[in-house]
Image (tube, rainbow, N blue to C red):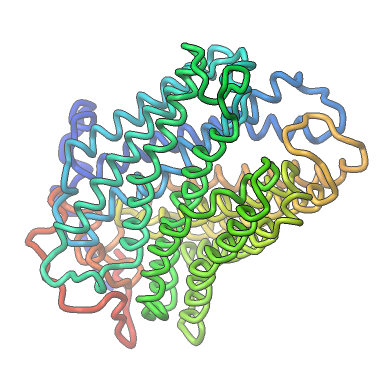
Amino acid sequence: MSTVLLPPRHYLNDGYGVRSWLLTRDHKRIALLYLAGVTFFFFIGGAMAVLIRLELATPPGDLVTDETYNKLFTMHGVMMVFFFLIPVIPSVLGNFLVPIMIGAKDLAFPKINLLSWYIYVVGGLFTLYALISGGLDTGWTFYTPFSTVASTTNVIPAALGIFITGFSSILTGLNFIVTIHRMRAPGMTWFRMPLFLWSTYATSLINVLGTPVIAITILLVAAERVFHFGFFNPAVGGDPVLFQHLFWFYSHPAVYIMVLPAMGVVSELVAAGCRKPVFGYSFVAFASLAIAVLGFLVWGHHMFVAGESVYSALIFSILSFLVAIPSAVKVFNWTATMYQGAVSWETPMLYAYGFIGLFTIGGLTGLFLAAIGVDVHVTDTYFIIAHFHYIMVGGTIMGYLGGLHYWWPKMSGRLYNEGLAKLSAGIIFIGFNLTFFPQFVVGYLGMPRRYHAYPPEFQVLNVLSSAGASILGVGYLIPMVYLMWSLRYGRLAGSNPWGAVGLEWTTSSPPPTENFTETPRVTWDAYEYPASVETDVA
């Protein structure tokens, strides 16, 4: 083992003042600004989840009123979906890693990158205003005509917040697409790129093509509410089902905006944890693009009970089964990579195992929902809640935490406490399953979502779910403690503490401001691991 000292100049100490951070164009600093933002909104959404689970611990609605409960689950969904799950991996890990992974000094448009963060903050402030000044009760889906006519809550500020934040996603996606196309280092061909870049590229395509749809849809909701236009209100000639088509045309691909980057992270973790190239690299790469394309063709399965024709429902059902194939390809290839590999039990790999387990459960139950007969039975029950939490929360957060632990030594130059990290990974996995698996059962038995009171026979399952939520919350809090602790007291990390391959591991930890002292030249394939790799830990 060799001792590697921190370089005298790197992105963290290149200017300490607040002004130097707020006006930075360094993609790595902007990633940390996003990290602070998404963490803030995560804990706001999490606090509302705590109140929801406390209410549901007993059958009668005895903690909050029904109006308050409506606002709690609405604002929980808005905060977690639009301000945490969608931006978290692209804006934090993607911002930090994309230029380094392709051997560039920065993203193609550094000023636009900083602008996207400010847009994100402004959109978040509008939504926080909606929360502080009375909340929102429409559900995070903003279904009309309730959101345009009936609701007396703060629809306009929340809608404007989401509309504004959408431009942050569009600009970030555009920046990634141009950067990956135009700024790859010499020798970095498309099929030498890490799979994280393939998933980021596919996610960026969805962001650029799909986000304008939800932005204009939310704008139409605001316009109808203010000017009483008849877009969606049937009383004045509008069509509420039109809103559902527009909303889900974006919002189903949005599921892949959340989980595709996590899949890219897991590919990196599995390769490094097994010291092997990812099995079927090209299949995994093209599966990311296939998910992005097919994701735009399945929105109608959210509307099986909305009055669409039997023939439309049949086509959307078939397409929904079809979109599962590229996801299954990824899971199969990760499993095949682990077969006879030098599988590690370090913290990042634990999160990869957790992702594969939770995503598999979420994906299989998605097949149940693609079947029209089952979907009609469980629509608007807690079965749906459990399914999308396994995909969007279990999958995305497991991928994010795995990536954060994997690249934390590179981002901070410090190592964290491995024992506490493994403990928190186990707590999160156990707490998540205890929280959401009972919801599959109670949903199949008929408990509807969005109700703050329920029949007593459902209490045992709800108590299990609430107990699991408390365990899950502890698991989420522990990493904040030891990661912050590591910034001051953690051992210095070498340039490559995991013995991994990739351009990000050839530069110092933390990276210099320009990422590389000279432009690298790539002459090797992705995940070209030697027979034995020794780690470099300070």
